[in-house]
Length: 255
Image 1: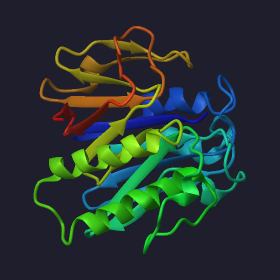
Image 2: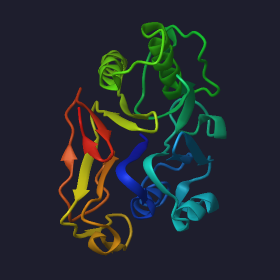
Image 3: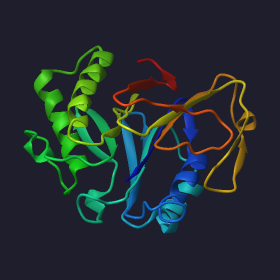
């Protein structure tokens, strides 16, 4: 299946170190060779890079790896295709507009009978069960709220109820953000780690890279990473349970 990577931070932070480990899994240390994508948020805007080529051999991935784009919220995905062909339109993450915000989503897993879920104004562009499920989530939010809610935590609790339903159709590991809050939902394989002072060194599992975060950060920085599998070998990652979800804001878990 695919692999996910997300970041929530309280200061603009580059994800080059973690992304270097993830892209190795896209056709080199892992089988996820059917495309990759990454979305960075900058204020209300977001920029995305996608390529249906394996991330370990993608020149676009090398550009992103070497170009330290700083963001507070990032979602990335490497794909092992099971529904839908290898193509740009089937490459995660997917983004849709809701309440004047760019919502971005990536999914790991496989769903059955997802076509029975009713859609409305939000339709998929590609052929994946993942994008279909995202469109269904957005449509449910349209039907539940007449206008943008003031309490976003209630919104994410509502989304968790949708995720519980999708989990009944198969494996549903998800990252979802509106550019401010980051939500993750686990069916069977998702981990997270929060880095804050005092910072130390981290060693990638998939690449011969070590970084000393104490030299790269201030004592006020808080950065949380979410990944399908831990990316470092010398840090303690939190493994999520089936049916568990978390919401992060400015690097801190708030729900």
